[in-house]
Length: 164
Image 1: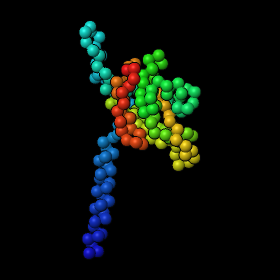
Image 2 (image 1 turned 120 degrees about the vertical axis):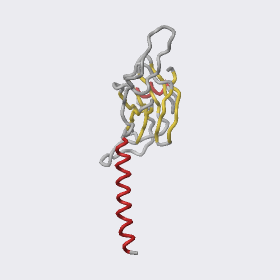
Image 3 (image 1 turned 90 degrees about the vertical axis):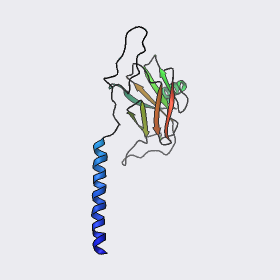
Image 4 (image 1 turned 60 degrees about the horizontal axis):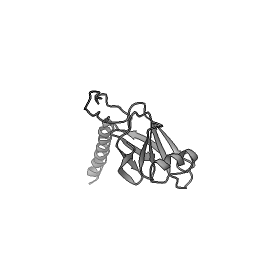
């Protein structure tokens, strides 16, 4: 019996390590990437294809929805919704979930017009426990997506982009 329990522990550790290596080798989608194969057509009577993902020069800023700038953005899109501000060349998403007012959430652009929000701060930062709505502002886009997939603390949802 003792011999059997000694062999199970190393096998379990080896299996966990192998699984970690396999999953780590697959990589993650948390990168901003462009699809060089997405062609744009300029001939009359054809429709340009929407790019498959964010352009390389897309950038993300976060603004509190209750700040002056955030209020202006929040008027363009409903809570939990997205809008294209053509004059500014910005896509805005008004967060549905409240995050700390002192520690902005982390916003990550992922492949296929996807956005992920996670609580900000780190182990050395004291964040307030208030629930503040944040506005995600994405710039560097020539054209917006028609839909945006958002993953936050409540799960994943797909929202229509108003004005796209």
